[in-house]
Length: 291
Figure 1 (tube, rainbow, N blue to C red):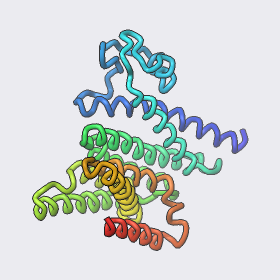
Figure 2: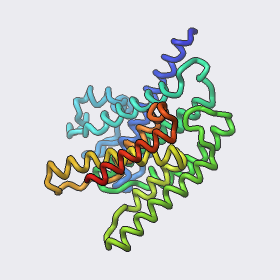
Figure 3: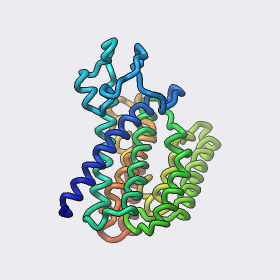
C-alpha cells in the first residue's frame, strides 16, 4: 500500500473517530449541567424513548429524521450534528498536522494525536457549556489535569519528540503555574474590586491548559491568543449592544488553545518562539490598553 493511501486511511479513521466522539460530546454538553451521566444510553428528552443504533449514527441520523424524534416527532437540537461535525473536523486537522508522512504512522504519533484531540474535545464541551450555562464543568477542566500529565508521561515513555512533546514534568509545572496564576488574579480582583474578576471555572480551565500545553510558550501563547480573541469580540459586543452583553471567558480561552494546538508551530515559525511570543503579547497589551 502506497504512502499516500496510508495517509488517506489514517485521516479517514480520524474523521470517523471524531464523529463518534462528537456524538458523546454533544450528549455530555446537554447532560453534564443537568447532573445526568453521559454513559447511559441515549433517549428522546421529550418522550424518553430509547434511541436505536440506527437513530444514533452521527449526523446522518439527524438528517434522515429531519431533526425530529422518530416516536413523538419533537425537535432534536441542531447542536448534535454541529458538535459531531466540529469534532470530526478537529480530529482531522490534528491528524493532518501530526501525521505528514508514512514515517509518522507509529504508536508514538497515534498517542500524541489521541492526547491533542482529547484536549480539543474537552474544550468543545467546556466552551459550549460555558456559553449555555455560564459554568465550566470540572469534568473538562480540573479533572482533566491528570489526563494531561499522564498523557505526556506516556508520550515521553514512547519516545515522542514531535509537536507539543513537553514531558510530564513540564505538564505538571504548567498546571500548577497557570492554575496558580489565575487563582491569584481571581483572589486579587475579589479583594481589590470587591467582585469576582475570574470565575473558578476559568481557574480550573487554566490549570488544564498548563497540563496539556506546559508553561511557556505553550500555555502562555494559548492564553494570550484566547485573550486577544476575547478582547476583540468583547469590544465588538460592547459597542453593538451598548454594554448589555456579558461574554464568558471560557470560549475565547478554548479558541486560543485550539489555535495553538493546530497552528502554534506556524505562529512561531518566523523569528523563533521568543520573538513570536513577544509580538503576540505586545498585540494583546496594545488592545487592552486601547480598550
